[in-house]
Length: 354
Ligand code: COI
Image (cartoon, rainbow, N blue to C red; front, side, top):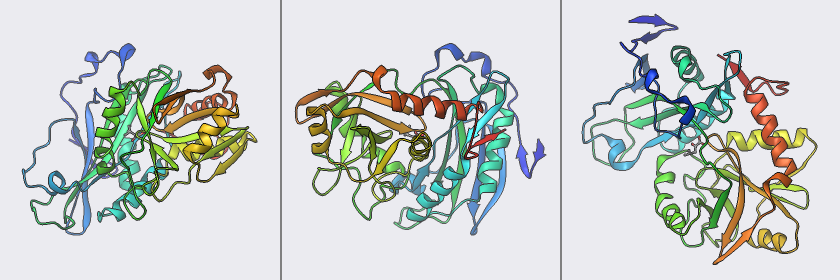
């Protein structure tokens, strides 16, 4: 056991790294040797620890299993050819985790515990960070309620944990997405803006139905009218109509994506026109009809920028322009990737070297 920055560290006796096939990484199935953990009790966060990744023991009565009081974040660490490791805008993830925590009645966490813990974890598991194009070490910080109590109230005790997973691309091809007009994801005043696990649980049945019909994902529409586009199951959405990048406003029913914000900033830096406003599915279909729908894509930590090739709506599949014609989003993607790898300019100081 060693101690760094007030984090007590217990290392694995034998690394599992030799079992990992870096050439064939899928998403989210392999986990690095160590995890970071910190417990909240008596109104404060306690000692931080880094320990071997292992099963956790819990009582069947813990609150999270019954009322879903749990939130999470998604981040990535990337390695360049010199072996330097970078993370991207970690303060945004702390900020969003704390917004989610407040909404779910959970305690906020300090940037120090979150980011310093993550940095130490990445130093210890640095060999797990892939340096192949399209691969990265996906980082999953999460917090969950652990009171052994099944009355309905906010828990007094919580665990904050970070696990990491070497990953390849989330999607291996441009997407076929279906506009969802039966189920909803979030309503005004709900938890749509939070990265609450329950938002994802509610998406699984509609997504499965869409997958059974040959789509990869759904496009959520608003809860009142099923008219306005919200987000997709794993990403925020952007459309380019007549040269203008249009994306629905985040922060209420829509997740405030870090990649969304970064992509919009890069777009503005490149001189592209950006509109954050409500966009109806009718507007998208009309633009497709008159030839002004140039592009549609998703943004997210896991998916980075992933192009949409087909939009299914009311039984019709609308095919979008060929991916190699999508100059703006391709340029945004390459700039984003370059910044994340510490290459070239980082005008907004987004990148943190480990
Ligand atoms: C992310 O992009 O990091 C996410 O959390 C989305 C998803 C994989 C659930």
